[in-house]
Length: 478
Image (cartoon, rainbow, N blue to C red; front, side, top):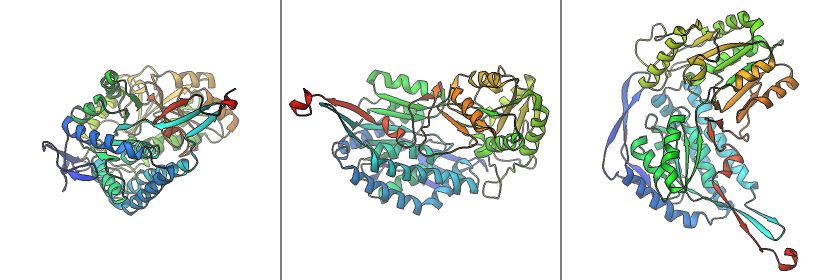
């Protein structure tokens, strides 16, 4: 039983102002696996004071000094990779292969990328007589989700520190263990007091306090669109910068060519990764209508190959994160059936033989139209919808017919055609044939948010731009 009853503030582990704890449930067993303290506005205020004090010196450090600290963090992160993976499996049900692989690996990858970007990043630029200076924005409140905990912590904390900002991190209360271990890593790496602070808690108690605090200069949030709207409202009176990575209903367009079967199977398998709990997942699979029957057979077979069960065993898919999530997914699967979509695989209820735990059947719907609820709403579970198209132009129209714009996918043997389609998808992150790059900007159009994370682009939102006129000698100014 894990028990974390202290916060990390000003370089020390401190008691909450008022001790109040929350049970953390293992979604595979439905049993309490730990308890964490949850904070309040008073705890946030202490952390903000520490971060504000530390900002005065940290913002003035040389990039080389920040690189050294980030390299120390990477060493400590790698030492604790096994602990992080075990925590992920326990708190949010990530199977062992995923926890030890991509879940932990993404954090290390983003950190290594941040270090390389910082080595080359230009914080000053001379333009004629004017000096353009990029300065750290200040104290940042970072609010991260439970589905990819380390990825989301990494893409916020590391660029913030690299640019000279100080931070207060609030991990999700559903998956708080990794955040606690992350704070231990920061302490072991010698991050100066007050530069990084951790306050555990929920949205009403800590999230609201962070987003509304007058001495926080920026809030970076990843989560639902609904919560993102509330954070923006809370932040508005203090006119702080708000960046958000929110929901998605991303299209995955399969082109009509010799790679069709492989690409359909790959798209279905990819949707089931992390139990479908990925904001950028290709949950709308677009295939030529003339090959719908073939796509259905391929998708059914691909779904049947997805093993579901105890995440500590050799399975592809563990549980979804909570009962709330399980119930929502079950309701939307039933909604798909009720609205007339063809159930190809899966369906309501747990997979056979699993009576405990928030396990969902890998589910495939076909004959889906883009006005159906399951094609409009983010299900955030292992459910993929197959939609048909008559032409590439219609595929693009369907792909863009959504209030979201986080990601898109195009798969096909004709790279020139895939590139042309990718250019027309209205989303912030479009992958051709499963391309991946830590330096590619990640973020959304429309209700999927604003701002960008990853690589060099992740630095920009943490910086203010200052123009110093007349900086150059007088003769240059003339």
